[in-house]
Image (cartoon, rainbow, N blue to C red; front, top):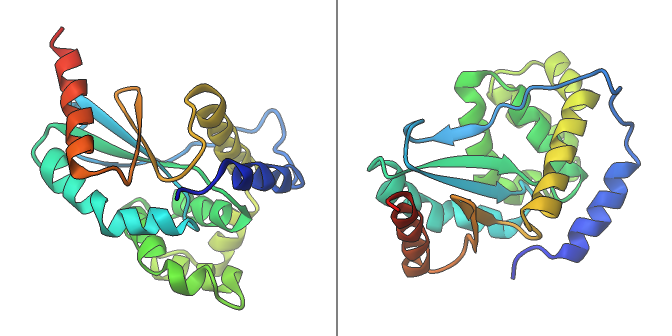
Length: 202
């Protein structure tokens, strides 16, 4: 089953213990987008770097989704962070702070190597090592993890997804405004995308 709403609530309480950003501070979020910018269908993927179901999605359904709909120009896929705990938030902050040309690689690696870094004796150090391979030096890693404005921007967007879009588990897809479980069957995902395409023709 997907990560539960209960886990979201527990994580939210923990996040509130972190220092909030100054109201005057803002942060630019660097979303990972695959596909043509003008693709008619937008698939927003809400995932958490520590969620095992999200890691499974990146190994199973996601490659098929990209090959079938993104590579053919029918849709673009936008990765939207939905961190379920402090470690996932730290991973997200590093991805948003990584060099543009290694950002996607770092994100993919966090999922493919989730079993090692997320359960490491020192996950913070393991994250730093992966960020280093993505071109970030120790000072940049520390700065990214201390970026209060970035932390708040990610937290605010997660709250918006939960309160306004009904995203209460990961991984979840929002396809042109319609929510569907990311681990749905290929047939159901195809139907959801075709429904979105049909809606554009009305």
